[in-house]
Amino acid sequence: MSFYQDFFKKQKILKKFIIVCQHLLHSDPTAEYVRKSLDSRLSRESQSCWRFGYFPTDNQLKTLTSLIPKSDLEALGFCYPKFVAGGVRPHGHFSQHNLIMPFTDAFGNIVAVLGRSLLSEEERVEQKLQKYKYSTGCQKDLYVYGLDVAKPFILEKDCVIGVEGQFDCIALHEHGIQNAVAFGWANASKYQLFQVARYTNNIILMFDNDKAGMTGKQRLKTRYVNKINIKTISPPEGFKDIDEFFRDSKDTKYINYVIDKIKSLS
Image (cartoon, rainbow, N blue to C red; front, side, top):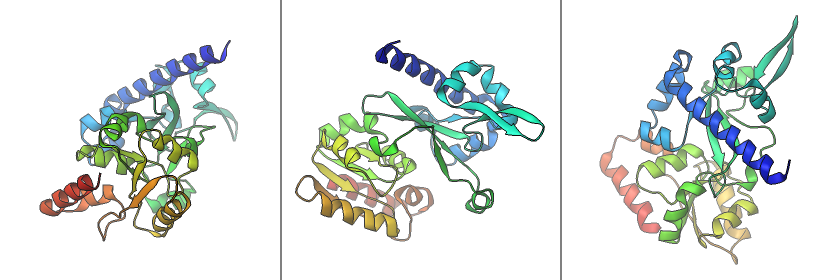
């Protein structure tokens, strides 16, 4: 099989996987807690646009394998045998990170899947779980989340707003700031910046209000001062990131002021 045949075959399986997980999110009874969490943060329109889905826990994997061949899931590394006391049982790669979303390149091809745990920080620490989990082999430093969706708006405005988290990016789009993308961390790589620079040389970084975010913005601005026009702004004081601000602020006038301010910069 040629490289292109293999690529298109994998894309076909990945797209089916995402569609099935979207279906499970809104139909499977065991996904209720994921639905409630997502509904509290995003509109159903945004959930559909960004193709959120539900990945079942290990004891509910048959729900998934009844809709997608197990061999396809194994080929993607989404399902594999796990050795436990008394034998072997099927294990899902995202069985503890049940909220999943596709991670696409600038052309809309699915390059990875990202799973998110909905456990509290205390529960994750106790179980030694990371908040996010990428599909096996994903090189997140090579891609920019949301670039395929934001690309026409970046070209129109000749400017991009770069944030850390995927939900920050989506929150900006929900509030009419559609030239936003997410790097996935504060340590954005040169590959990510150069991908964005293919569409504009004007980048506004709005990383989290923490040490990593502040350090990351300054590092990028200093390193690429002669290559890219980088400006930096911060989420409103008192909030960790822009998503938290939109969710928790009760001051409608201030929210609209912040939206207008961000739009004026880009």
